[in-house]
Length: 227
Ligand SMILES: Nc1ncnc2c1ncn2[C@@H]1O[C@H](COP(=O)(O)OP(=O)(O)O)[C@@H](O)[C@H]1O
Ligand SMILES: [Mg+2]
Image (cartoon, rainbow, N blue to C red):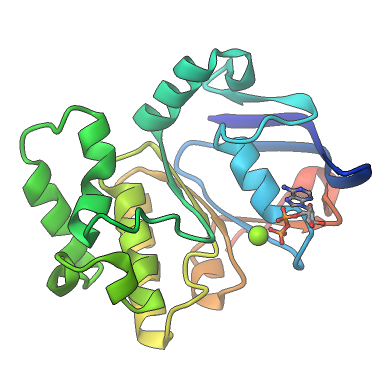
């Protein structure tokens, strides 16, 4: 479904060059629950952004259902993201002046607010137990609540693929369990899930598990572990 082909990413900033990814080959199959782990700075976020069409690799290609997404125009690539992907950022990036409800609804607004949008927002919020917080602004929510709002926003439009960057990093045990169950249910409904995480509850759900070490996939083609 998503294929990374010899993907490398070098960040250059004020003369310094940081090689964040080196020749990563990876295939994400439809229906996968893929776990990405690795120590801090190993390139996990860079890989997720690259797979999600948000960060152009320095070399190599990312194919989605056979299309090289970085050969698309910016507009076409944005449309592809809207239609197919749900992304949950490590730093959430909620819109500070929109309520939780309006933040979650945002991807539906981009799709022209289809019928049933309000019900869809409520249903997702209930499953993530943030339905009592829908009228609050992000600043009025706990970090764990903000994280679940970000997850709700990632999923609300029913994407084919969910990409989530440390989605339980700020949650207590109970809410980690809620979120893990949520992702498992979405995966069982047919969505492909790619998660950067160190959380054992999530790792257990994965059908594949890859590790990044200094920007490289550890092991032959990053394969593979059955669980
Ligand atoms: N925008 C950037 N500019 C320069 N260096 C960056 C940038 N983003 C990440 N890096 C560097 O790239 C490496 C990989 O970062 P990242 O993908 O965020 O790792 P991880 O998510 O595994 O912690 C790190 O050394 C980080 O400092
Ligand atoms: Mg990261």
